[in-house]
Length: 352
Image 1 (tube, rainbow, N blue to C red):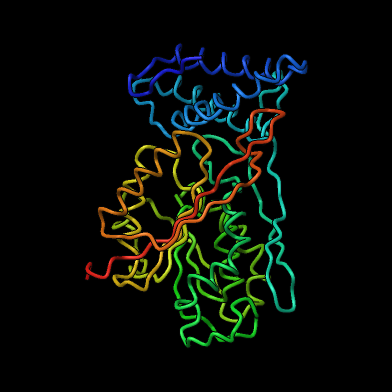
Image 2 (image 1 turned 120 degrees about the horizontal axis):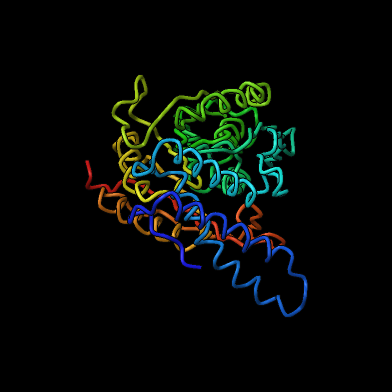
């Protein structure tokens, strides 16, 4: 099915008929059970990536060429369908309403006296532009790797004394001096896990619409974070389009964490600029960017982000990829394997 190009400013009728057709097509795919339909699932999985990008672009667009009343109808239809695809909405076509908010618990491995930390996060019903109200799989993948990441790539930041005998996941270690900035925090899982496991200060940031839920989750899990010496976390509004207008905020972080940040065509440029603005101006500072290769659109956005980073005199320290089972973006009844690509960056020595 050919999807309309938003750059061509398709009208209300075109957008609504497309959304209705997509729902009907995928409902038919969901109900297919015969052996001869096995190939249809493979086709649907490929098409699903384009559909996800189409839905995200609708939600992110201002749709300024459509009347405000019709714009709200399109936003509502697209966000509800997106919620259904993510398992966050009632699939009963007669109801067409998003499910009430839910809470999920995420177990993050650690060491020392605990084998894991369980963070319980509230996820309100996902509507409109608020994609950050859901905990996406990439944050969980990165959070589970924090011990090895700290040991292998960030020890010079998290362990300023340089004692190789110390275990970065043991609660008794000396407080880390590193200041960490998380961009696009969403429900807060990665930032909270980093604070608790590394025993350091984290500032979690996202757009204004996400702040209330992010602050709620931080408060609900503060007792688990505060058990670790030196661990602290706070949150603040940050719009990547205007990082210079964010105040008050320190402009020099030793480490920046970003998980699953690319949905819109403006994100590569805005994200690279924000990273450049807030990261310390030295070759010791680091940036971790984790991007799921869920579809060709996301891969293209990451390639553009790479170009933006290189143009700002950043260089790659390491690249790592792993496959995760992603139910968030799967076609119904089909679990999707998604490659999560993690890159660590530093400034080139000649930059300063």
